[in-house]
Image 1 (cartoon, rainbow, N blue to C red):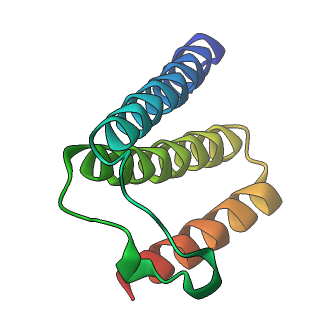
Image 2 (cartoon, rainbow, N blue to C red):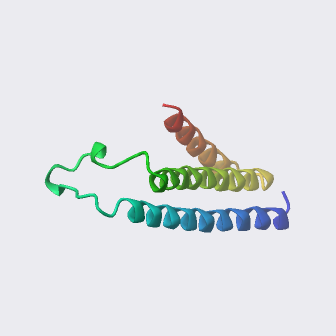
Image 3 (cartoon, rainbow, N blue to C red):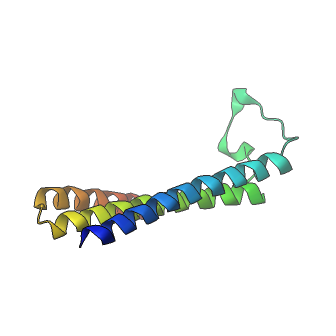
Length: 107
């Protein structure tokens, strides 16, 4: 891959990460806006104490999925860049990390 294409793809991932932050902030604002009256007992805090059906919560979960996707894409681009430069040690490390991440997402 040539350098300009890699730079463009990396810039795309940076913009995507910024977009994820904006989406998460919007989701957090909506979550607080609609659930501001919810009282949490912090002594017995469990996952089930948070509402999962609100729009804000769904947007926050979507932003987390988007963040994971953009980081996997970034790692794939960097691994392909190392492959184009015949730097096989970094290709092996990137491929291993991609395999571990893929396995953890599938299980």
